Structure formats: C-alpha cells, structure tokens
Amino acid sequence: MQYDKVKDIFAKIIDKYSVFRKLFYLLLDLLLLRQWYVKREINKYFSTEKSLRFYDAGAGFGQYSYFVLNRFKKAKIHAADLKTDYIDSFAQYAQNKGWNGFTAQQADLVEYTPKESFDLIIAIDILEHIEDDEQVLQNFRKVLEKGGKLIISSPSNFDESAKFTAEHVRPGYSKEEICSKLERTGFSIRSFEYSYGKFGQIYWKLALKYPLSLISKSKILAILLPIYYIIFYPIAFGFMLLDYYNKNKIGTGVIVVAEQFGSSII
Image (cartoon, rainbow, N blue to C red; front, side, top):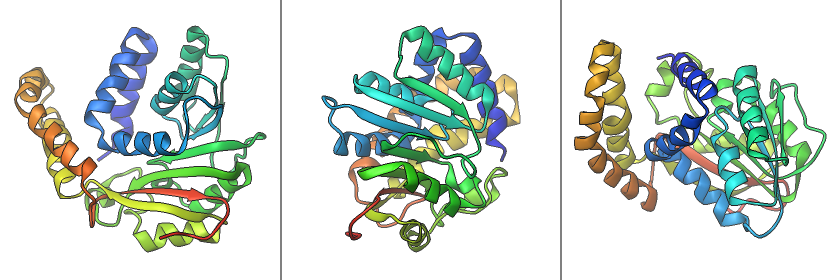
C-alpha cells in the first residue's frame, strides 16, 4: 500500500485551510496509538518547566512539534523533513502563531546534521524508509547532548503489513537489530518496548484497516465513515487503552529510547 499519496492529500488540505490543522492533529491523536507511546516517553523524561531543545527529525505533518510547542513553553525546536511542502507548511503555521522558537530545514537525514545540539531527538516511523539507517543514527549522535534522549518508533519484524508497504526499504526491526544498530553508532539503550500488541492489533483493524479498505473499494462509501466510527470507535478506543497500559511481549511496533552515553540497561 502507498501511504504517501494519502498523506499528501491531507497535507494539502491543512495547508490550504489552516483552521483544520488543529482538528487534524486531534484526529491523529485519536487514531494513531503510536502517538500515545511517543508522548508518554517525552513526558517521562522532560519537565514542562525547563527549557527543551528538540529536534523533530522527519517531522512530517509537524504534529510532534505542535505538541512540544504547546506543552513546553520554553522549547526551541528544529524540524527537518525531506518533503519541502510539509516542512514549509508547518513553518508558516508556526510563524503565524508567533512561535519564534521554531526553525525548519528541508533535508535528507542521511546527509544532514544540524549545527546546534539537542536535549531530545525523535524519529517516528522514519528509519524504515531509509537504506543507510546507521548513518542517520550517527548524525543524531553528533547533535545529541550528553544525557539527552533519542526516541524511535518503527514497525517491528512482527508487522506483516510493513513488508508490503511500498515506501519501506525494510520490513521492520527486530529488538536485536535496532538495539545493535544503536549501540554500534554510539548509543546506550534506555528502554525498549513493543507497541501494537494483541489488543493494539484489534484496534488497528477496527480504527484504520477496515475503514481504509472501505474507502479503497469506492470513494462513495466514504460517506458511511461517520456512521462506522460512531459504532466502532468506542470499541477501538478501549483496545487502544488496553494496549497502552499492557506490557506487550510482542507487537508490530517498537518504541526505543536511547542515550549517548552510559551502559545499556536492558
């Protein structure tokens, strides 16, 4: 499946109608379980009362920059993305909001290293798109402050659907692979967990797989989506909660937190 085409449609809508951007971010929070995991890790390690230098690598729609700018009032954010239209759109939105602490750069993460250093770097569903992922990790290490955190979200090797996603260059990471690559590039593993376990898989089917399949069959069927979500989203939301609070033994996603120094604790 080619997800980039779908994302491009949403990007054009929120760029043209900025009033929908906040609503769009809310919908992402309601529908994407990985955002719950990533935000939990950010809140775990960083205080909203202190300044935060944040590198949003592969920023996409800018939803994590938006989250940090709203929650961490002293944050300074640098975002980078390969897609010029994505990054320019959010940069203009941030400027209109008066967020002077935000800067952006269109860049290939394999070749790009920011000039400043950061307390927090995130790479959310990015590395599976990049052939030379270890070079990207080395670039991250160069700009991560000692004691700073790198948060990675990516499909795992248990995600069968990732093998058929056109934009992915690898089917997903095993725990051993992602941890060894991080350690080879100068990181220590702070934590590792699986997301989208048995409960998360049920949520994913109810909230995303089945509705997208419905639309793919006929755009006319899209008019049925509000009725579908009224009936099935409360059930899907319950499974999201079960996945979020359950320690998954396996899952189709991985959430890894790494540091630049010290011994791995897992």
